Length: 110
Image (cartoon, rainbow, N blue to C red; front, side, top):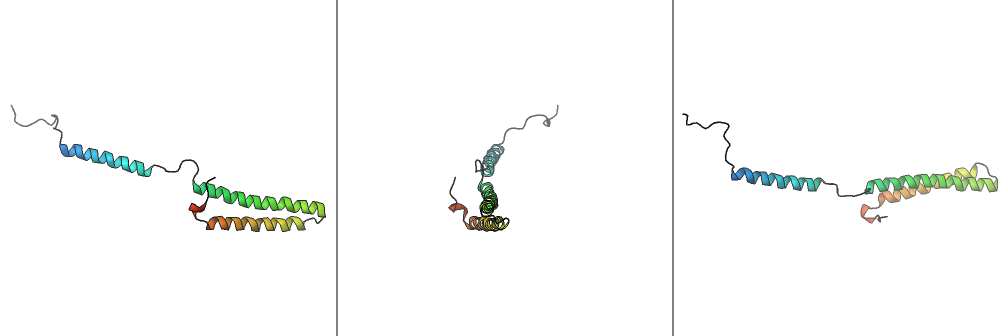
């Protein structure tokens, strides 16, 4: 009846399309591997943030406890507390600055 092919007839597979699909699949696999997170558990930034927080709180609270103890036994009401808290803050900031100036490779795991 008609020599024209119907639009519903399947088109034969082309080798170029197969090769393109294989290359796209390989590229997607490489991209997924490249974007996969490499660090398992907590990362270095989270650990360094916790270290800064612990240094700051430890310096302030440690200085306050030692200062209060000195005030209690020496009967020098606010002087020991204030001096030791200031000393604790200074030590805490020194530790934070020291940690900020170290290279990430130099920080030991643990």
